[in-house]
Amino acid sequence: MATEIKSRHAVVSRQPYELYMAFVDMRNFLQYLPEDKKEGIVADYDSIRGVVQGFDVGIRVSGRTPYSRIDFKDDGAPFQFSVSMFFDPAGEQGKTDFHIEFSAELNFMMKMMLGSKLQQVLDKIVTSLAEASEGKVPEGFDSSWYEGRK
Image 1 (tube, rainbow, N blue to C red):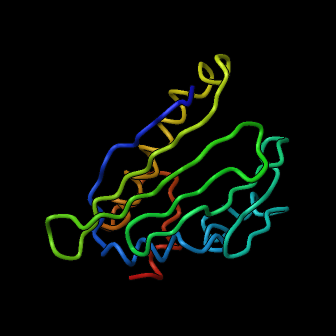
Image 2: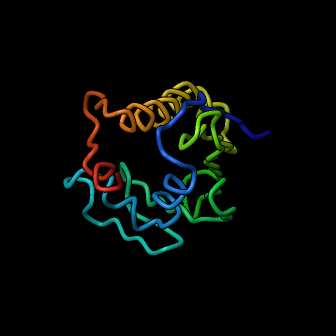
């Protein structure tokens, strides 16, 4: 049975197409990584791959719905997973309701070890993006990639 985790929703002060374009090309993810984590990471338009804590992990785009959704799936990882990012117009002009959904085939041990951590990571990504769009820089967050998109 798959483990399903849904992030919180947050309003990001950018239009859906702006956020979509930032995430649609996997090469963009390289600029989000700290310099000391970039070694050995390779990316093209559809995929990104590297060694993370000793595991060879790859992620591939499995679907794109222009300006509203991007689906990713594992491309060689210790377990099967998928991630979907949603970019829905918010009630206010020029803003986006952003959230992430994660699904994985985790055994009992992995679910116990990772379940709550995955929820925290997804929520932090969503919150950090919303805060960065408002000019707030969360502690430890490198917003330089985002500043160039204003």
